[in-house]
Amino acid sequence: MPEPFDTSHAPFDCLTASQVKQCRQAIDVAYFRRGDTLLAAGDSGDQLFIIIKGSVEEVSEDGKETFSHYTTDDLFDVPAILNGTAKHQYRALEDTLCHLLPADVFLAIYHTNQDFSAYFDTNLQRRQQLIAQARQQQNLAEFMLTRIDDTNIQPALRVTPDVPLRDATAKMKAQRCDCALVDYEDGSCGIITRTNLLHALVLDGHDQSVPVGNIATRPVISVERGDFLFHAMITMTRQRVKRVRVVDDQGQTVGTLDLPQVLSLFSTHSHVLNLRIARAQTVDELVLAANSQSKLVHTLFNNGIHTRFVMKLIATVNEQIMEKAFRLIVPEPYQQQCCLVVMGSEGRGEQVLKTDQDNALILADDLTWPECQTVMEAFSHTLNLLGYPPCPGQVMVSNPKWVKSASQWQQTIRNLAQSANHQSVMDLAILADAHPVAGDSQLIDAIQTPLKTSLTDNMLTLNTFVRPALAFKVPLTVFGSLKSGKEGLDIKKGGIFPIVHGIRTMSLEKGVSETNTFERIEKLANIGTLAEETAENLAEALKLFIRLRLRQQLSGEQQSNYIDVSALPSSERDLLRHGLHVVKKFKESLAYHYHVRD
Image 1 (cartoon, one colour):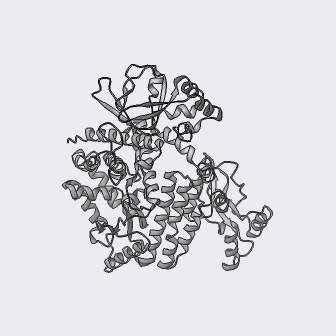
Image 2: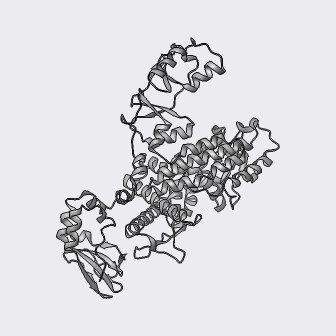
Image 3: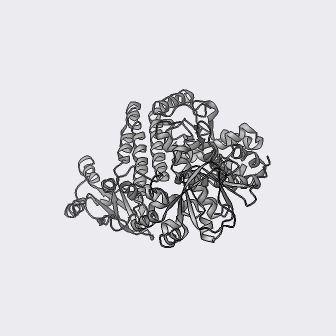
């Protein structure tokens, strides 16, 4: 006897209790032998097939063209039910057992349950959202989607710059608050806190009659009402502040948010990690702080936090770890005369778990620093201690190839763009994702400017540049089903890399300065280079691929890019298959646009 119909998988997990009962009462079971036709082209769509065991192929009416394969927990043929007749035929590749749901029951639910009907939308983003909704745990997930509004904004005590310290302190005590905003006549805003007052009166020896405007901190870091609370926490983490001002869409103050308030809603303690990094005075102390990062990743992922939010938070933490290491290792006189940049997935802000070092150094043209090589070797060794292993290709600052003056970098990039051979294309791809994390960030122009001038609309060089995105085959069979080897399905070569490098190529062509792939996709869509639906599908496919790989890596295979397809539920197999079809179509468009022939 087959198991009772399981409604815990998408799209049936969004049914109401009465709809579940309706399905279970109406559903039947049918057995088909190998070679049997389950549904012929032109047949009326009388029922929905849900495979219990076995496999089925979808072929053209004449049987010469195969469109897709279906296996355990997969379902078909919804278009036949909605349109009245089947366009293709379905035949059993082996002995197959199916649940049969009558079309009238399916349609009754389809027309009354929006989430159920939306699952069958061909838009990948919508389908992934529905499945994600069913799996999110409510505590942290709800926080990630909570916006800054009147329910969580704290009223702000506001004073003018001429108010004496004594009066400001009295007002803060009366209103039981630990800060006040200072409104200046020019429209700017400052902030005073209990700490400011203590330092002013005790350490600096100010009289109580001194105006608060003399000690207030300006400018105040601000966030907008309506933004995500998570973004407010990211801002506090990045700016190393405990309070932010909340403004409306006109830039007017509406209140404040403070760190304890936000952390009361979000218990992953990411800001605690940030404070430990900031307070580290030695490499050993920084190592202890950095070691807790992996625990943060597990906490975020296991509580259903959106993948892009996790990447953004971890990218911020990684920046702070590297910037702190830079300040501990590089002598202070040289810190603002050079710029440390990270590249690859770190440069794009898309690496969640720590990966190989991938960095470079830009030196000011007038800098004389004989010990630079020795210091950079020490820096690379420190990053290794912090959990970032050496790059196998030696793309790191301990290699003199990746340490140059600003003018040398400019000339290097022009030479690479002109030669456009295999190695130069690899180097250009690495440099295209360069992102400053420490030192004088303005020196990044030495890389970004020549990249833009050399590659924007340079179709000849981009024809060579784009080829790596087309080098790996999409892991789909000729029939459109998932193709997996002994080790599993290589999601990096088959899905992630083609999108990342393809979008990188298009961004260089159009002079897009963003380095994050998702931001590049959004920018390309905004300027009309990518159709809106294509952009959405590419972003959702990439997010899916990264999430599947991360889950595999968190299970113990940290460096693995292989996905065990057999372990995925049918809903995720369906999404993966859909996402890889998005990649296949994108690669075809890249080959056509850049005139690349097999």
